[in-house]
Length: 311
Figure 1: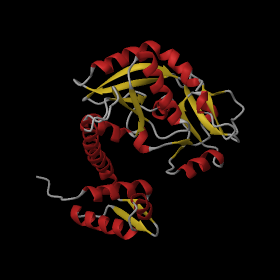
Figure 2: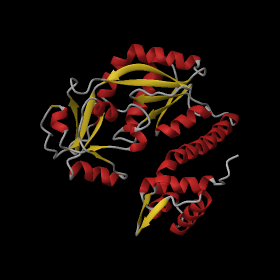
Figure 3: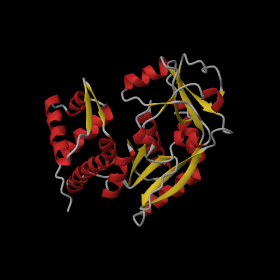
Figure 4: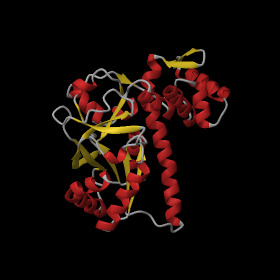
């Protein structure tokens, strides 16, 4: 029996403080006082028997022990949230609220026009295949917890995903693009090589890029040497693009342009080959609707890319 007793609130505060590097930012995210977060962390450290943070002014840094516990804490919080969503879905079903035929999670951080893209995909599937789709963005760890809890039917990943509990089916492939600000030195180049990009920082997120074979991890294996830079807020992303000549790797869709503020450029496929779009389901839990969706998307993937590119 595990001898350490913690509660989900402590784990939530710990995970947020680890991500934000600040007790005050964690408190703001949870709408509680800084004192509440600080006390919870002191109680947690007393329970585990060692410091989790090095405190310095307004910021905190993880100790080696703290770093080793971030992943388990993230998974625990995700599982707890998945339980709550399972209860909510059950309540809605009992109340007679109509559910989608297939519930999908697109593994991606929020991006420009993501609601438009998700809605366009859902409507296209509904119109052409007669399958009612619910597609929402989600972070990988949370989506996997929801998949295991039965809250969603499948995950859509950009890049391969490996887990012995899951089946990963390639639906099609997409080209790689680099999203950069309007004043970036490379803004006039139509096709970018790794050599063009190597001196400029690329956006990195440990939670995202450690979950599956993302576009960034794939490109780094192929020889991309751009320095990694991690940012946390939308304001920092804007500063990263506009003032630090940074760029974000993603799917090359012109629909993702935010003209005149930022534009998506194609990366040379000889450097960055096409990346697979995958449907991930739990082994032994594929439904007839999922099978129909898989067949339809695989057959119509080129057409769907053209439609989404013009959205």
